Image (cartoon, rainbow, N blue to C red):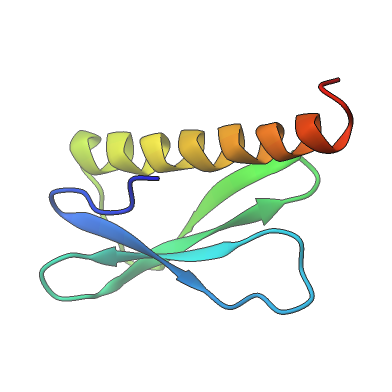
Length: 86
């Protein structure tokens, strides 16, 4: 899974007693916290929760979207294998 992009990267953080992962989105140069990626149960998918006062351009949003796609596809794969491919 790709976690490093040109200007941002994602670091997994411990999420004890949970079935899904939590990831910090950080600026590559300064390690500034840009937001959090975590499971949103109501939508049954990973979502991005930006930190206050953050600003993103299209390139960064594309990278965040790519990362979310990877996580959501991996999660669907886990469900399919757990449920016999359904």
